[in-house]
Every structure is written in structure tokens, then in C-alpha cells.
Length: 428
Ligand SMILES: Cc1ncc(COP(=O)(O)O)c(C=O)c1O
Image (tube, rainbow, N blue to C red):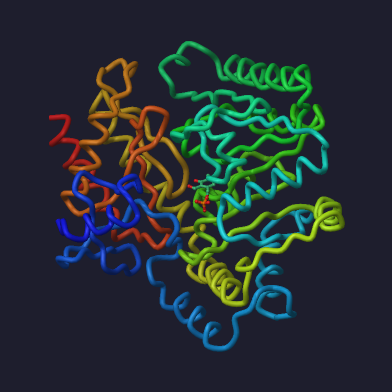
């Protein structure tokens, strides 16, 4: 490891800026699903969702270069690139979701969606799950439940737990019982928001529940939440920062799998394949209301360069059939992963969807005690063998596998074989 660089980093961006792994990786280049470190060692990237179509995709690089060499200005001028991209992006939503506001990050997108919801409903009350992350602005910090923050939850925030059909505690309960109890909890939160005078502004759900650890939720759960919130006068925000753009395989957007049409869809990470591009999609009515009341302007959001990049990413997703590939590879991986965990009682059943999946690690065969330490060891042992992935969930005990959608079937033996070898080594 390069200690000089590490110390220079500490001396500039500080000690608290997170670094992965016991020994941080010093990366110098990336191509497709491969990352190369300073010593020339190649790693299969099974973690990064931002380089959605692959690291340094030549078409993305060329789109960026060509537009940067022609014109880049903010969006207060007419420019074809920006409108071409907005049209293509919006064509991937249900007819009512037909307006987009660009931003630079997922945080900005969520912040803006809440601001619009607040102005529309006149209420401040927010519902959020009890282990989630939606961004880092001051406003979003007050609704953060899944990451350490010094600030407490806002008075206007109520949290609810996302049920997991595969959890040991739910083994003896029917899916219907679990659903009824989970929706009753949401109802109680809504009633409390009303009683306390905050009213109901919005609920936000990350549609694959990634920070929550990819729980398998009962059929009708998200639809039920949306119905209850709307009955209480609130709006529904689907956070697609992680689940969107075909990550889940079966659908282009995660909310579509749950059968809802949200009032706001917020997007980020994969949209620009690493270029800072994000946004909020909503209805013409909500945009009109907000636009008439506020001059929303965002200097770097949706510039011609960002739009050229975002548009190229969408075209690559189509041309390389990446959504279909995510579904197909997810379907190939699942049974192999099921075999792997079946032979080891302290590993939970495979969870997730498309190319975002994993399994829980426990210290006991009854799967009652999540084992974060063993999960950490697995992540390190997998890295030592040249594959990068991570962990998630409330206790950090779910292995998190989320490669660029550029992953191909030919990479599966390395990915799955490495996980299996590391499991053998760590679990014995
Ligand atoms: C689900 C989700 N929403 C929002 C955000 C915030 O996005 P950004 O880091 O681009 O501000 C993140 C970032 O990790 C996220 O995972």
C-alpha cells in the first residue's frame, strides 16, 4: 500500500472520508467490468453500479469528448442535446410521468422532490423506512436512518420497518399476516403525523430496499404503502438512484415491479455512468405548480455535456440489451447461489433481483444471529482473490453483489467460483 498517498489524503480530505477494505485499493484504470490497481493487478468489479454500462465505455467517453469540444453551457439557452435526452428519458416512464428536472446528484433530486411535495401538500410530515439512505443535504440528514449522522431525526419524520419474508422471525407467519402487520405500522405512523400537526407530505421508498439489506417484501406491500399515504393526502417518491435503469432486470425502474406509479421518481448514480447527472421525473401538473412559484435553476444540471452522456448511456442500455442481460444473468446466478447457500446452514437464501443480489450471513444454523464480522471477512477474502463486492443491511451482514450491467455470462464462473472459495475458506 502507498502510505505516502494515504497520508497525503488524510492531510487533505481528512481521515473520515470512507475507504473500502482493510488495505485500501489504489486504482488507476477501469475498463468494462475490470479495475486495475497501481501494481497492475486486475479485479472483477462486482460492486460498482455507477459505471452502469461499464467503466470507461468508449461510446460514453466519445459522447463526452465530442460535446465538450463543441459546447457546454448551462440550460438557460436552447440546445438540442438537452431536449433530445429529456425526451428519450421520459419515453421510459408511464404516460403521466412526463416532466423532468435535472440535478447533479441523487441527494439534490430527493431534496427537490421533497420540496415540491411540501409545496403541493402544505404538510411537512415525512415517512421513511427505519434503515435507509436518500442523501446528504441538511434536509435529508433529518430523515437518514441507515447511516451515522450527528443530527437526530426531524420531529416531522416517522419511520417504519420493512418486513422480510425470509427473516427467521417471520418463518411461522403467513405472507398475509406479515403484510397486514407491516401496513398497520405505516397506518399508525400516518395517524401520528396527523395527530402531531405535521400532516402528511410524502413517503420515500427505495424500490429495491438496498440499504435495508434487500428484504423480500410481501406482494402488495409497496402498493399498500402508496395507497395509505395518498389517502392521507401525501405523495409518493420512488428513489431509483440504485434500482433504476434496468438494475433489477425484470423492469426498467424498480417501482414498476411493485405495480405503483409514483408522483416523483428520483434518479442518480448510473444515469451518467460516472458523470454527475441526476434528476426528478414527475407529472406536468406538479411541475407546473412548482415552476410557477419558484425559479428553479441549477447551474451544472443537465448541461449539453451531461445530456450527451446521459443520452449515450440510454442508447447503450438499449443497444447492448443490458436490462435483458441483467434479468438473464440474475436468473442464471440465483440457482447457483441457492446451491452454495443450501450446503451451508449459516448462509441465508439468495436475495435481490437482476444484477443486485446477495445473501445473509449468520453465526448460527438457525439463522437467528446476523454475523457482520464473518461477512467482513468474506468481503476481504473475495477481494484477496481478485473480485470486488461489499456488504449491506442493518447489521452489515448481507453480502452485496452489484456489478456494472456490463457483466457477461463469461464472468460468472470467476464471480461465483471466487465467492464459493472464500466461503470455504472463511466458514471452513
Ligand atoms: C438510494 C440512494 N438515494 C440517494 C442517494 C444519494 O445520492 P448522491 O450520493 O448522488 O447524492 C444514494 C447514495 O448512495 C442512494 O443510495
